Length: 375
Ligand code: FDA
Image 1: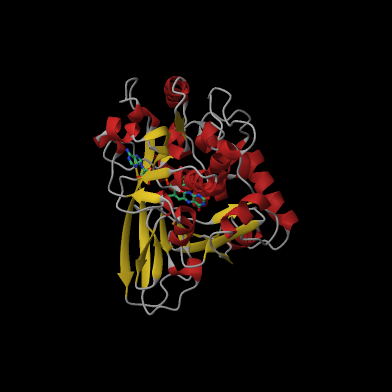
Image 2: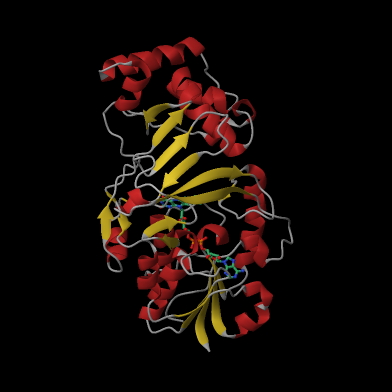
């Protein structure tokens, strides 16, 4: 008998398994995919680690989480500095003095601030009614038209004027020449790729891939005292209240017979006409000298049962639906629902690790659950 059956070998499942294993608990990890690691999985193509489910940059302000992941794999320092391509012109992201120089030729923070403030004032939007108005009221028309509008409309498959203003709460603007996308103190990429992190976490733990929990739920549950479930919460309850919605993506990868395609890990296509939202060139994460390169075009996809669920759509309707499933989950003392699908929540990697580690702190994680590691 296992102490824990862990459904899903992504970061939540893998961290949970590692911590339980370390405390002498017997764990079995199953995953329906053909590989371990969930969405951080990398596929090796001629020595290049291809981030199969979108580009992953590890970033955190927590020394504890940084030291935690560094136990399992060494990280190479990496600063994510994507470029925006708007109809063939290139701009630095996030919005900073480099971007403002490229947009307006201005060389001082005062000049840039003045231009943005004048543009905001000219529009006179005091109570934004949609995403377009919200964005313009925060950064002015030029930044909005060239760097936000097309990209956002492609992502959501709708006009910015038909999207709620709440999607954009703030738009960070930096009046320094700083292209570092994340503000976090610790940032990097695991040397040799994320599979090394997964391997380190799951070392010595029994794992089965190509194994779908729902193909024989009763059997898998009968093997363990408790279940840690990181799949979709609505699927666990057989969609009894209806389906939660997700935005999805399609990844199209190709290997090119050249060393360097775009000179940077990510270029965002911010115009409305280019059908994809970005091109990722994977070798730039680790700085490889291979003679070929692999690029991935990322296309936004809407919500559909056939599409892989990536980003929860946390609008009012879905949030209410999730709360109903959450109430059901809280009535099951022997099942823990965790991770981005189990909690219907967008988590960055450091956050999902922290959320799994909470179960191993002295106080139980969730007041609703009768669960501690000492049981
Ligand atoms: P994850 O999805 O990784 O794992 C769940 C696992 O459960 C999967 O392997 C799945 O196959 C399995 N499963 C589901 N149902 C099952 C069933 N019925 N039976 C068996 N197995 C089942 N974060 C960050 O910090 N920096 C970044 O740069 C990025 N970039 C990024 C790009 C894109 C495009 C996305 C969508 C996300 C990111 N992230 C990110 C977020 C990051 O991917 C995320 O935090 C973790 O992968 C979440 O790990 P989980 O374990 O929660 O889910």
